[in-house]
Amino acid sequence: MTSTRTSGLGLPAAAIVGLALLAVPRAVLHDLGLVHERTFVNLVLVVLPVAVWILVAVTARVPNPFLTLLVVGVVYGILLALTHQLLWHIAWADDLPALGGNLAGRLSPAAESVVLRTAAALSSLFTGTLVGAFAGLISWLLSVATRARS
Image (cartoon, rainbow, N blue to C red; front, side, top):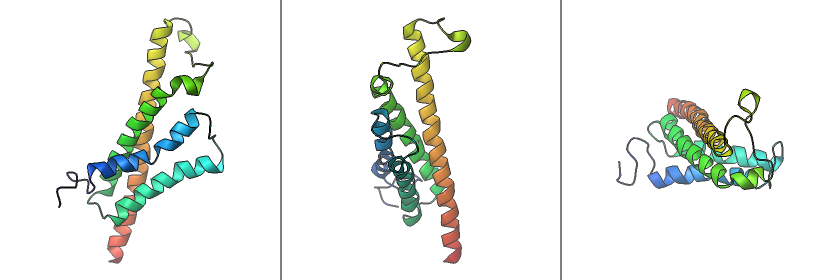
């Protein structure tokens, strides 16, 4: 193993971050209102980065593709959370989210903002991790299949 590889992940740290960054443009464009759900452009921006993750993990023959792409997904989740936090006021414009139900109006605007932003950040982390796990599972299955044929 060369010194440019991360411990056990089979890719340099820069590659891990680079792969995660491939999925960020969709979040930016969505938060800016430039791309919308259920469009072809959105589909490409969702699927293509993950397909690249899988392709890289399989072709690089990383030792544990599931773990490698799980880490890529966690990094993506962090970047996704940062993106949403930085673009919060643009994404929500004049219609900032508010707590509803029994919590409506019970917290100060500052406390309500902290609760909502924390929930959004946790959701982003969960989403990134889940995407990484899904991609990792697919890449692991492909790796097993290709090694079995070798």
